[in-house]
Length: 337
Image 1: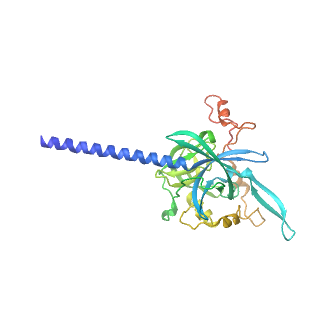
Image 2: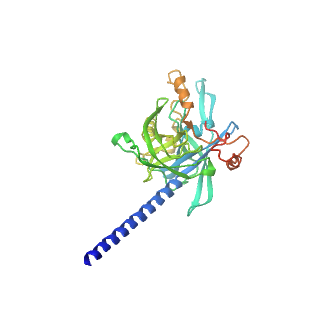
Image 3: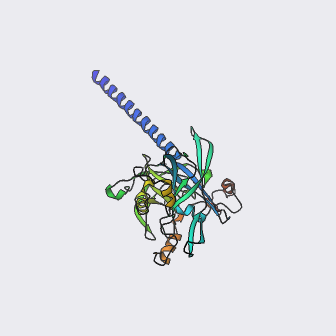
């Protein structure tokens, strides 16, 4: 009798312990999900010349500059590439010089309370660092013009061991604006399915997280919420490519912006940020290495860049989705570039 009682007591305690563990795990998951949605934004890039528009995703970080809390956003270069403009000016020596400028993209943050959308906030941002998708790293860093915009930001996985490689099979989350603003803060899951894919001699990691046009620039995270890469290309059916943090880190170190990844790095002043060249070396020169035709062809083939290009004459993506035939995965007007 005592033995039976003891067995039942142990079983009951084990069940209660497992239930408590499951409840705690569920709370932690909800906490991570809320945080990732809070730091994710939609990037709207509308060319002032009317040349084109696109929508993608971005991830916010918060840094203190000159005693003020400033929000920066990581996104993919190809999300904002058509905002780039080149003009010629005459310098002090009387020589013509080409200057690269960017129109301001718009940052859109969803406001959610208790799981329900209650509105949105729109802010202009300034492009402070850019590398294009064809001849560069396909990365960009933006600075939100409004002060004290975000309350929290991403934490990046910066491990020294194993070259900061996330093991194959690791569970991941992706949060992005799938199909643009109408799909803002969509959360999907998957795993790291391969490491070190090369496309045009550029390194990517492969993941099965679900992505759609609009996912470009969105973060991919570990289940503890740490950022491990930026989603930039996809071919559907669970084949998507991310720029891993280790590649972002190399780019950041090269251009002296490690503060955009590591909050422990000393922040530059506003004047020093203003002096940052928006592109690595201005415009291409004869000495600059460019990709071969074969490499460029590989980049333009699958997997595609995955930003949303709204249909001409339409500003409402939801309207475009309503026009799709039943069962059609993507409207031809929601192009994969």
